[in-house]
Figure (cartoon, each protein chain N blue to C red):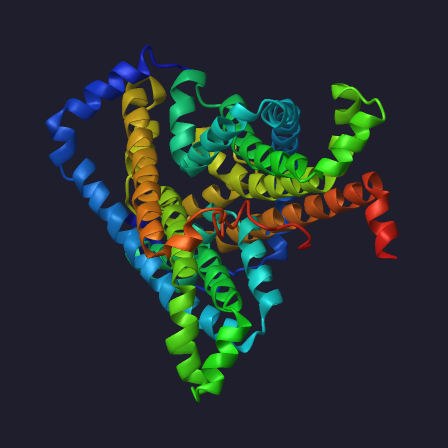
Length: 228
Length: 246
């Protein structure tokens, strides 16, 4: 309750302070770097696990229901609770944060990839089979390329929500920009620190999202060609 | 990096201690706080989002705005909003700012579903109602609103579950709720508090899952039978229909 007593609406605590940014550029940059690296690693690992899992759900029909149901249930579990389950086993550190982040990203990606794969028209599938494509050939030459828009959507959603989620990691050790938000809260509600970190978070999400859109354009050239 | 010997066993012991239930700040207190905060936040969200969504849907305008709002909240870190709003209100860290912050997270699914709910009403039904001489506001109240109820329910479910999940983070800003149990556990260290951390996690996750199931049943009840099957889950803001929206 000491917070309430110590807080005054004093003009010495502005929302935006260039002074703060300049004086703490090292800390801020380190936080941004950690934030981006945690996000990148989490999404990358999630993609690497999610793709085989989705293909499994796509090939083995009876598995699709359970895989999607489990991911739906796990997605309902609040982030704090998830970290609480992991932390007593892995301790507090980057690993714990990463495991939690990967889990959430995984669920989002799996859902979208499965939806994307299921969108491949049956005629296309049959035509590919008629042309003599085997199961793997069809997967890599037909199914996955056609599902790319769905995959990209999943990865974009996962990336943006992971950026927001990293901040929660501050409780179990590493929170990237969440570290600044929390420090600002504890440091007598230092508004400039909280606001700077929050804005950088949103900015990071936007930048990563734009990057992914760019990547999507490059890997699916046909979609833009058709638009023209 | 100290790791508790057997967190699950500790957690069971902790949950079975009656004092941990009835103490001030015990599980019952925290559960009450959690539910009060969440209920107020969802109610506030409904108060704002439903009239706006229904009205925009009735006008058939503002679809872009609805999508924009839904997508923007995805990128805002919960922790930042929970911290910023209390600071902005300058009213300290009581219950009100936390409720307002959580309501912000309830608005997108409620708004999007209210909008979609009105938009999906069959244009012929709308024309028929107009032909019968209903005024614009009568059309909204007597035709569009009842037909949008299943969508409103779906949005309510998503919003409520999300708010209950997010309310766990209120503990970061001393807002109370079940998250506080987890936070206290971390406060006394993983070795000593491991059981309490896991116990708090079980409670928070259990409450979120329970809300999902119960509200899912409610959603089913208010959805007319012919619409129940084959319709996808509506309005998951994080996973739903973001295709094509930049």
